[in-house]
Image (cartoon, rainbow, N blue to C red; front, side, top):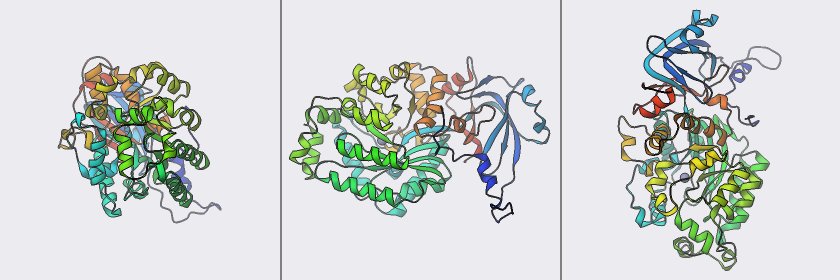
Length: 469
Ligand SMILES: [Zn+2]
């Protein structure tokens, strides 16, 4: 896939270019030293190459790197890679018993909820009560928000993630840029999606507020993190606010994403205009007569947002409810979907909607990426010493164990499918010759079949070798 123009913050050459001014004179920007490292392991796997080997005949990567960037000079068997002239002066890292992978993508999480930690949930209690718990624990103090995001970044790295789609949640009722700043300072790459709600009597003022914030931003990339927009969900954002988000995104080339078809409460509200979601809006005192005409038309959430989906290029998160007609809309619009398997299981989505249709989506040609959603809905073990934090490798292993999903497909779901959702090049998450990966991981794994299968059947945590660790 062709990269979007804004999507190349990892460009290796850019860093060097700053070392001279327009007249060709050296200025005071320090250029970091470039090094070359030869890494060996039992195998290499990514969306573009798969090189099985063993301790006697290792696979290898030759990487040129500085403090900011990495470029793959050669990949293959150790014998092949050693033919490259740069190996003579290369440093060496050996990881016998491991598989080398590019750093993974977590295409959907909420880092500003990290302070809440993992929480048990009874799906029978419903989604609306869970939302109440989150709202009660949301932070509004900027320093505390930044600290929560920073801890989330630590948990991402622990799980092998180098590229993230984070939702910058509403703080004290207002959209907040604090999570973007904190994520940019972490050194991770990705998109910080500014979240907003806009429904009922608040619709117009909310659109105005988010537009004011976006117009106030003078540069939409901080560090390696792009600003994006997330209208929260179709049961909390009116159709005209989705249109406004689409206009803003087009105007400033911002990536877009939205939660969609997540819960039975959302489905009931969209189709019937009734249920706990309506009660919540009434209790907040923001529901009005005009809004009643926008919902309750018997549509599914996907159908309800069809116009936005087709015209905006937005990615969508969850899609736990997906009829054949819904799937046809998404496939026709080539919409990218982020699936958060353990979050769907935590909320009991299968009980209401049946098994998630990610394999049907993939078969229909859709790119499905994996996300964790927030730490709240993950098993408590992810925070243990040996846990994978906010890693999507855990999500992929969960699908492999539960559904027997093809390991090479799962590798794409945690690498290239995720980078495409976020508007980054495939090169940022592959290890093919010439690629510029955000990070390189060594994952203890061995076994039969493809290296991807070894990784999915291992329980071991990844180690960052080079990159944003
Ligand atoms: Zn979410």
